[in-house]
Length: 403
Ligand SMILES: [Zn+2]
Image (cartoon, rainbow, N blue to C red):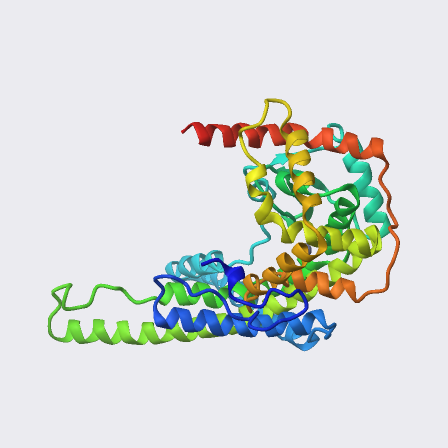
């Protein structure tokens, strides 16, 4: 059974929209958690779309917790240096190891760019010029690095390395699915994250977001019992006791981790909404809504991106196929697709509000015009500048097909 047979399909009715299709083969426990998360995520998304402001104290709490958690490796490092000087050296080395294991990580540019293609301004001058124009329209800093992630249906930003370089990643299937105005909206949203310093927000809350997860994993008790290990007497008792205590602590850490993750994800969803406001500033309301409609209809275009395309014409043919597909979707069908995302994408752990809710929120904003316009010639050049990466994807898909 497909998802869209389960609820009322009239676009304005939300009856039964917070019910998901049953997950085949899942345990009762997992199913009930998934259902609860889903309903709560649905409610949270609905509140967000109605313009309810975020909770600044949650963010402040996450930062405070992170400061405490960063103090652990700092203290360990200082103690390690002290012990290496005055001894005992062995404990100093051990503490050094602890400090290294729990050190705060700034991410690495190389790691972010792995499997992606850097697209510098000498190879794509018109694309870079447009990104610059959008950035100044929304008062955002420009990305330091623009790269193509050939297989991605999305776009993302990241800030990595000691120099905290701003990176913008663009996916080819996404670029093949949108028009120029929607591309401006996309760029407005992405550089909007730079303007809003969302990476710094994430960085400052990162220790809180991951530490308890790491602790939970580290304390996960062994699956093999003491009896199975042929332990006897006191050894067996101590081993089983430790297995029980560490299991309990692991569960507790996991519970704390889950609470923190839902709070942080909520903060992320608000950040997405703030970035959407900058998309509207750059591209106007209509194009921003168009971008959401394109995203909601992705499942319909998936087949259009294939290896069965003439060599050298991947981008042109994909764009033509998807444009044709999009023109067949009237407002009614598009509204149903948007509505479907409200159900399938809702979760307390989701970093983004569902596409349908983002559409709903932007629809409530006053109509506005685009600050950045793209001429026919500019758009044609930009499509040409990214076309070689569509060929890369085409070749990959064709190879998979032949295998
Ligand atoms: Zn975003």
